[in-house]
Image 1 (cartoon, rainbow, N blue to C red):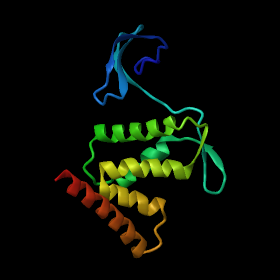
Image 2 (tube, helix red, strand yellow):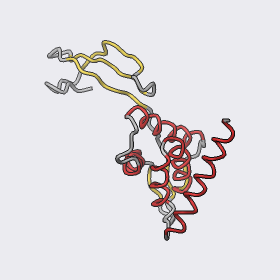
Image 3 (cartoon, rainbow, N blue to C red):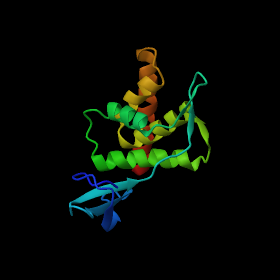
Image 4 (cartoon, one colour):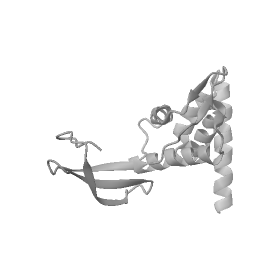
Length: 159
Protein backbone atom coordinates (compact mmCIF):
# COMPACT_ATOMS: atom_id res chain seq x y z
CA UNK A 1 0.00 0.00 0.00
CA UNK A 2 1.49 3.35 -1.06
CA UNK A 3 1.60 6.25 1.38
CA UNK A 4 -0.86 8.93 0.17
CA UNK A 5 1.59 11.68 1.22
CA UNK A 6 5.07 10.63 0.09
CA UNK A 7 4.13 7.65 -2.12
CA UNK A 8 6.59 5.36 -0.34
CA UNK A 9 5.69 1.76 -1.17
CA UNK A 10 5.90 0.29 2.33
CA UNK A 11 3.46 0.83 5.19
CA UNK A 12 2.72 -1.17 8.30
CA UNK A 13 -0.65 -2.07 9.76
CA UNK A 14 -1.01 -0.62 13.27
CA UNK A 15 -4.56 -1.75 14.00
CA UNK A 16 -7.31 -3.81 12.31
CA UNK A 17 -10.95 -3.96 13.27
CA UNK A 18 -14.35 -4.61 11.79
CA UNK A 19 -15.77 -1.39 10.33
CA UNK A 20 -19.03 0.06 11.68
CA UNK A 21 -21.01 -1.49 8.82
CA UNK A 22 -19.84 -4.95 9.95
CA UNK A 23 -19.08 -5.87 6.36
CA UNK A 24 -15.54 -4.60 5.92
CA UNK A 25 -12.24 -4.37 7.78
CA UNK A 26 -10.78 -0.98 8.74
CA UNK A 27 -6.99 -0.94 8.94
CA UNK A 28 -4.91 1.87 10.45
CA UNK A 29 -1.61 2.12 8.61
CA UNK A 30 1.60 4.06 9.06
CA UNK A 31 4.14 4.99 6.38
CA UNK A 32 7.56 3.53 7.18
CA UNK A 33 9.29 6.53 5.59
CA UNK A 34 7.41 9.69 6.68
CA UNK A 35 5.31 8.30 9.56
CA UNK A 36 1.96 9.51 8.11
CA UNK A 37 -1.02 7.55 9.45
CA UNK A 38 -4.12 6.75 7.42
CA UNK A 39 -6.99 4.26 7.25
CA UNK A 40 -7.86 1.76 4.54
CA UNK A 41 -10.93 -0.44 4.15
CA UNK A 42 -10.99 -4.00 2.90
CA UNK A 43 -14.20 -5.55 1.61
CA UNK A 44 -15.41 -8.57 -0.30
CA UNK A 45 -15.13 -8.57 -4.08
CA UNK A 46 -16.86 -10.86 -6.55
CA UNK A 47 -14.27 -12.30 -8.90
CA UNK A 48 -14.56 -14.25 -12.17
CA UNK A 49 -18.29 -13.78 -12.63
CA UNK A 50 -19.68 -13.27 -16.11
CA UNK A 51 -23.03 -11.59 -16.71
CA UNK A 52 -24.97 -12.82 -19.73
CA UNK A 53 -26.92 -9.88 -21.17
CA UNK A 54 -30.36 -10.18 -22.80
CA UNK A 55 -28.81 -10.04 -26.28
CA UNK A 56 -26.37 -12.87 -25.42
CA UNK A 57 -23.29 -10.68 -24.92
CA UNK A 58 -21.16 -11.47 -21.88
CA UNK A 59 -19.37 -9.03 -19.64
CA UNK A 60 -17.61 -9.28 -16.30
CA UNK A 61 -19.57 -8.42 -13.17
CA UNK A 62 -19.18 -4.73 -12.35
CA UNK A 63 -20.16 -3.70 -8.83
CA UNK A 64 -20.23 -0.05 -9.88
CA UNK A 65 -23.12 -0.72 -12.29
CA UNK A 66 -25.17 -2.16 -9.41
CA UNK A 67 -24.22 0.75 -7.14
CA UNK A 68 -25.10 3.30 -9.85
CA UNK A 69 -28.50 1.72 -10.52
CA UNK A 70 -29.33 1.53 -6.82
CA UNK A 71 -28.24 5.11 -6.19
CA UNK A 72 -30.50 6.28 -9.00
CA UNK A 73 -33.45 4.30 -7.58
CA UNK A 74 -32.74 5.54 -4.04
CA UNK A 75 -32.19 9.17 -5.05
CA UNK A 76 -33.79 11.55 -2.50
CA UNK A 77 -34.85 8.60 -0.33
CA UNK A 78 -33.81 8.34 3.31
CA UNK A 79 -31.40 5.41 3.18
CA UNK A 80 -28.24 5.70 5.30
CA UNK A 81 -24.79 4.82 4.00
CA UNK A 82 -24.74 1.84 6.37
CA UNK A 83 -28.06 0.57 5.06
CA UNK A 84 -26.87 1.07 1.47
CA UNK A 85 -23.67 -0.90 2.11
CA UNK A 86 -25.68 -3.70 3.70
CA UNK A 87 -28.00 -3.73 0.69
CA UNK A 88 -25.06 -4.11 -1.71
CA UNK A 89 -23.55 -6.82 0.51
CA UNK A 90 -26.84 -8.76 0.64
CA UNK A 91 -27.21 -8.60 -3.15
CA UNK A 92 -23.64 -9.76 -3.72
CA UNK A 93 -24.00 -12.53 -1.11
CA UNK A 94 -27.07 -13.87 -2.94
CA UNK A 95 -25.16 -13.77 -6.24
CA UNK A 96 -22.23 -15.67 -4.72
CA UNK A 97 -24.53 -18.26 -3.12
CA UNK A 98 -25.53 -19.32 -6.65
CA UNK A 99 -21.92 -20.56 -7.09
CA UNK A 100 -21.94 -20.07 -10.83
CA UNK A 101 -19.34 -18.54 -13.10
CA UNK A 102 -22.09 -17.13 -15.36
CA UNK A 103 -25.49 -15.69 -14.49
CA UNK A 104 -27.97 -13.72 -16.52
CA UNK A 105 -28.56 -10.02 -16.08
CA UNK A 106 -32.17 -11.01 -15.45
CA UNK A 107 -31.12 -13.07 -12.40
CA UNK A 108 -29.09 -10.13 -11.08
CA UNK A 109 -32.08 -7.81 -11.59
CA UNK A 110 -34.42 -10.17 -9.73
CA UNK A 111 -31.99 -10.40 -6.79
CA UNK A 112 -31.68 -6.61 -6.69
CA UNK A 113 -35.46 -6.14 -6.75
CA UNK A 114 -35.98 -8.73 -4.00
CA UNK A 115 -33.65 -6.83 -1.66
CA UNK A 116 -34.73 -3.35 -2.74
CA UNK A 117 -38.37 -4.19 -2.02
CA UNK A 118 -37.41 -4.84 1.63
CA UNK A 119 -35.39 -1.62 1.97
CA UNK A 120 -37.52 1.00 0.20
CA UNK A 121 -40.72 0.37 -1.75
CA UNK A 122 -40.58 3.64 -3.70
CA UNK A 123 -37.03 2.83 -4.84
CA UNK A 124 -38.22 -0.68 -5.70
CA UNK A 125 -40.94 0.72 -8.00
CA UNK A 126 -38.44 3.12 -9.59
CA UNK A 127 -35.96 0.31 -10.23
CA UNK A 128 -38.64 -2.11 -11.44
CA UNK A 129 -40.10 0.45 -13.86
CA UNK A 130 -36.73 0.80 -15.60
CA UNK A 131 -35.60 -2.82 -15.24
CA UNK A 132 -38.91 -4.32 -16.36
CA UNK A 133 -39.33 -1.60 -19.03
CA UNK A 134 -42.88 -0.67 -18.05
CA UNK A 135 -44.71 0.14 -21.28
CA UNK A 136 -47.46 2.32 -19.84
CA UNK A 137 -49.27 3.47 -16.70
CA UNK A 138 -51.28 0.20 -16.58
CA UNK A 139 -48.11 -1.87 -16.21
CA UNK A 140 -46.93 0.53 -13.53
CA UNK A 141 -50.28 0.21 -11.72
CA UNK A 142 -50.19 -3.61 -11.84
CA UNK A 143 -46.76 -3.69 -10.19
CA UNK A 144 -47.85 -1.13 -7.61
CA UNK A 145 -50.99 -3.15 -6.83
CA UNK A 146 -48.88 -6.31 -6.37
CA UNK A 147 -46.66 -4.40 -3.98
CA UNK A 148 -49.63 -3.01 -2.03
CA UNK A 149 -51.28 -6.43 -1.88
CA UNK A 150 -48.09 -8.02 -0.52
CA UNK A 151 -47.64 -5.19 1.99
CA UNK A 152 -51.29 -5.51 3.10
CA UNK A 153 -50.85 -9.25 3.78
CA UNK A 154 -47.80 -8.55 5.95
CA UNK A 155 -49.76 -6.03 8.04
CA UNK A 156 -52.69 -8.43 8.49
CA UNK A 157 -50.32 -11.23 9.58
CA UNK A 158 -48.66 -8.96 12.17
CA UNK A 159 -51.97 -8.24 13.94
